[in-house]
View 1 (cartoon, rainbow, N blue to C red):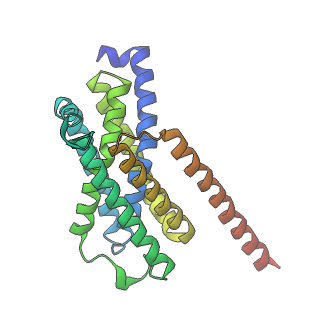
View 2: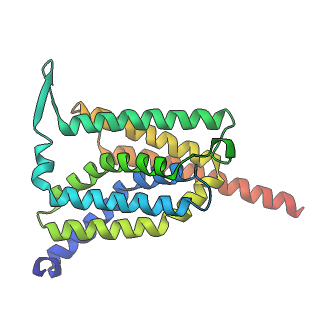
View 3: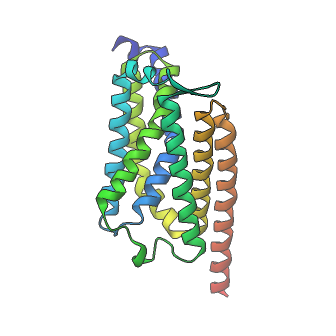
Length: 241
């Protein structure tokens, strides 16, 4: 506790919390998109359970740091390329994201979006399972970042909990905003395709700097938001005439 109250501890906590929120953006986008496939009364429950699962996986991984580090040890080779448990999980998770996002983009471009009741998910459990599986993959970046930032387990856990509480507070507004704008849904799905590609690259030990990824997505998001704002102002001006 003394470490947490020190200036160094507080700085580590603030920095790590910010990084956890940034790294959780892909998680909350996926949860928002998948939960929007459910009936309206089930969506808040799916988002809450999804984020609680993400929190549980992150805390369990932090408590099992020795086990987590063990996943980075090679278990077999493909040619001269060593493959660890972490590599396998990242590869499968990346393939799942590519497949899921591509399928959703196809539905939207073919006119079968989330608003079509015929395409609603049949089971809340099925959606929660999808979220849980991706939570495991997304948790690796979060936990490995925490381990790289500080050696204090208490600071890691508090940062993860704070970031998840913030994400939980903004989950519904983000989901509602994405649901209202198909262009943002396409952008979010394209972002998940990029993340899937990054995960597959990381499984092959090809490191793609995350600032490049998030900067490009942030720029595209700002442009899209400005376009939406301009369209809304144009519509308002047109109605006022």
